[in-house]
Length: 338
Image 1 (spheres, helix red, strand yellow):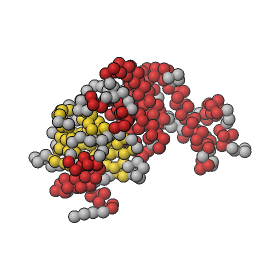
Image 2 (image 1 turned 120 degrees about the vertical axis):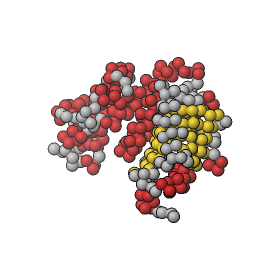
Image 3 (image 1 turned 45 degrees about the horizontal axis):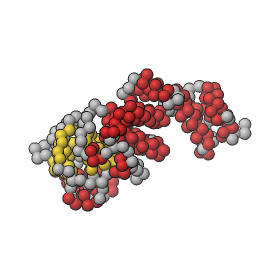
């Protein structure tokens, strides 16, 4: 039986779907009759979105949940499932897609086969795959994974040697990998709540972290380790501040916790960049206030409301810092005559 529109979305368990610009979809088998789950997954998710086939374990009911986010230059997918084997081969390879795929095994056990080689992934480990190669992802126990796909050209512009990287496990304790997983999870959770500009910046940051996690060519490894990870963490820290600058409770401590580093490490990162956490935060709040003051749609909003909405708790302090930053008062920027 075939379904269409909202009825189909409800039946296959799609719990969230945004506009095509964001392309966020969540899929779950929870509300699908057990006898229909495999067929629906293959027809509406495997064949269309993943371009892959599914072979579930015969001795267990098939269960799966997938959240995917597609952005220009990046596709993220977080999935959990019962034991199953997902394969991309044969007719699916005819689409010519040669994206670089980084698969991270969050929990459970997984066996990977691609290019005539096989690898087993323990919890927290990752592996680099080619979308142009026949590949199988065999989950042998219940577990979770996160997968990132980026255009091959992105890696070719870095110091990463793809020929050396394919089918080479990435250890779970690699700092860049942990940071990458945290960032990808944040993007998947944030979804459409972040604006286009921040999404574009986030894609670049994820690509940078991917290159660091995969690992540079041998002759560049030492330099990348000393400079690259700190630079990537600074980018992630700034993105976090940009996204949360309106919150009154944002602090060095909350930022450090999100990065899994110490508050002093965060302070040193900003100091090495020629600023401080507090000054960077204030700059972001002032910039947001300036944008709002220039928008015609906000012309009737009280300046005090704008100040509080962007994160300031003291109107006098806001006015003073705004004038220092822009050489004009908030009223002058908006063009108020009174």
